[in-house]
Length: 241
Image (cartoon, rainbow, N blue to C red; front, side):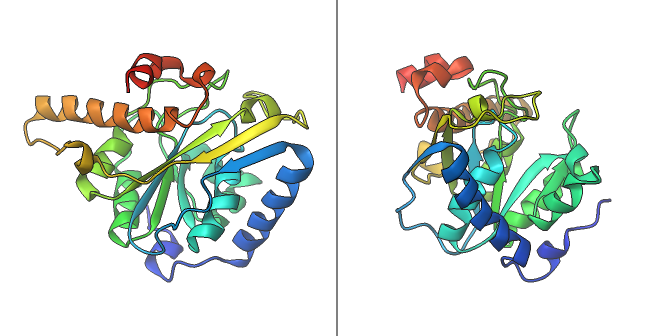
């Protein structure tokens, strides 16, 4: 069994690296891209569990979101990231210092799910890309159901975030950025799946259907924050919403 991260066992607060990273994100985003941020002025919850969900089209999605949202929330954001990053000799220490934890992407990861549940039970901020992998062209791909299960079982509010155009700045499978691209960051309204009438049934077959509906609802909420060209696999559902 994987040991819980130190930040989950102790006090959850910004460390020096986080503060530096937030400031650096602000500076670099203004210098290297043409960034527009919408929805940052809402009265964000300062306590209690929160799940941040966003589309995933660039390796920089999470740093960009965290750099602007975490200071507004006044508390760290703990991302679920692919496990390989946590073992990387260069990126691993950075990922861990940022308060993130690894997830197996090849199947069910009970340790990661246990940590994610503990994050929410402690009233902290959990963040994830429901799609599980980066889109190659910035459009939405079909998401996995793990995050929907967490949301249904915890009843935690969900904050959808849409990232627009970042895949043009740092496309998938590339290491060199293409500066001065237009990028948008849109933060939606928090919601709960209970508000949409989605309890988690006890019957296994009904659970699968409920998880599929909940996953679609989460992705539609993200999609509403994106331009139509990025709706991808959820175009029909977003268009009908």
